Amino acid sequence: MFQGDADEALALYRSVFPAFEVEVQDRYGAGEALPEGAIKLASARFAGHELIIYNSPPIHDFKFTPSTSLYVECDSAEALDAAFEQLSREGQILMPVGDYGFSARYGWLLDPFGLSWQLSLPHPA
Image 1 (cartoon, rainbow, N blue to C red):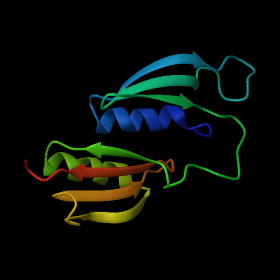
Image 2 (cartoon, helix red, strand yellow):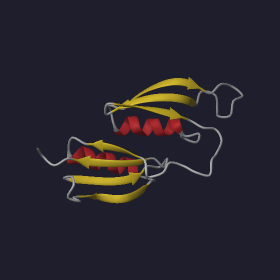
Image 3 (cartoon, helix red, strand yellow):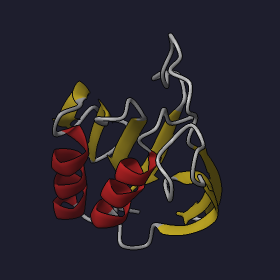
């Protein structure tokens, strides 16, 4: 659940991953808790999965947790490095990009909105 910043988060994800498709289901209207036109509810299709995005107006004492991550297998080292750099900017690196044995290249981060991403380049078959 995003806390008033879903529009910015989805714009970042679309810029990092061209295949990240967003369909806005509902927007806030005049006089509602968030500015008129802000995303209230959306769905996103990415890497064969559908994600539901809710933009919550109340500020909570919690955000996303790294115990739940989006795990993305990248097509190339260059794609992984570019996505990692863009998503981790103003975020937090949990594991820097490297070879940890279980994949050819891997990195784990929290993006600027607190969402956890694990990016992996599988070993060649």
